[in-house]
Image 1 (cartoon, rainbow, N blue to C red):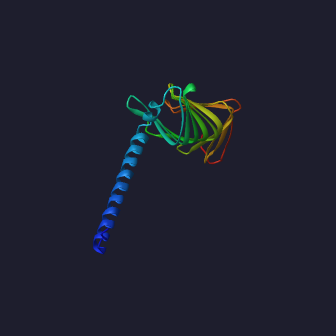
Image 2 (tube, rainbow, N blue to C red):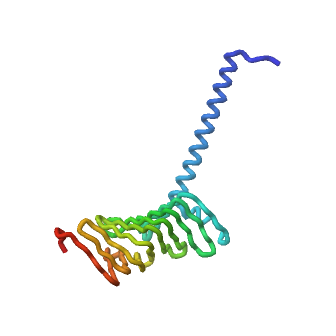
Image 3 (cartoon, one colour):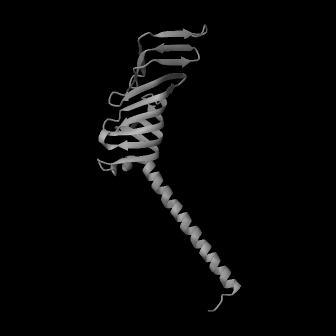
Length: 195
């Protein structure tokens, strides 16, 4: 067997390494483009699932639109699709609701459920809602997509620099940007706050 000269051996090694680098870069580009396509259209993931199948995935992003307008977007660290119940069980979720006046309401919670047949959302565990300078804390709440209403049937606290208000239940109409508090509504305000 004829041995290669050092120059030819070096040239072949360079060609081999160049081919490996080009193949690796090509694979990275393919994976990136595929990931971007799925993350921008998460319905592609759910549409490939058979009705009787379950699937778990990490890091999910879902956006809901109506008449071409974004109504909300949701991110979660993990999701488990339960086809029999038409639900996606979510962990460590963050939801942004988009309002008519171009403002946003942000919600985060430890756990949640997205009902895939209605786009209704239920969340629980360290629930925090922020809107402008207001912060609402509670342990669970629900969002009704058709009416665009967030409602809470357990005690909650609304905090701002000027004070705090607590109530047993509340609802927040995202269409009108109006909050309704009910049951033992109590508040404390600083002396400098204006009512």
